[in-house]
Image 1 (cartoon, one colour):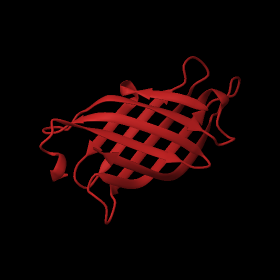
Image 2 (image 1 turned 135 degrees about the vertical axis):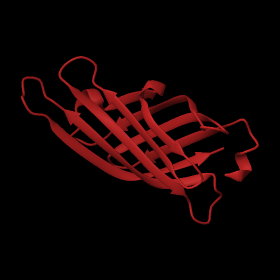
Image 3 (image 1 turned 180 degrees about the vertical axis):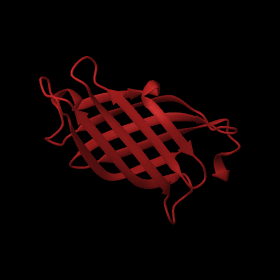
Length: 140
């Protein structure tokens, strides 16, 4: 990522679009010590029939970005969002990507794993659904 190290900040974009999900995430990244993420946001559309209706469309902001890592060889992010109110439920989206072979070092490809936990109203046990697929990210 030497080509961007002279800049004070960069923009990160990650997206996936398959039969299970569609999402786009964006963040500003400060270049230098710590490479902190700022102005984080995104939208998630869960297409899988097993997803609860209130989780079908969700927005993420900086408070939902619980973990992040970016260096020359790894991009990792974790977004976690709980259901508002009752009953308990959450989505947990993890992205792991590496620079694409043969492409500029500003392009990443990898995998996402989305876990959806739902405790239906009146039930004592919840159900977890896990969806996986490919993700692409770019840094510019």
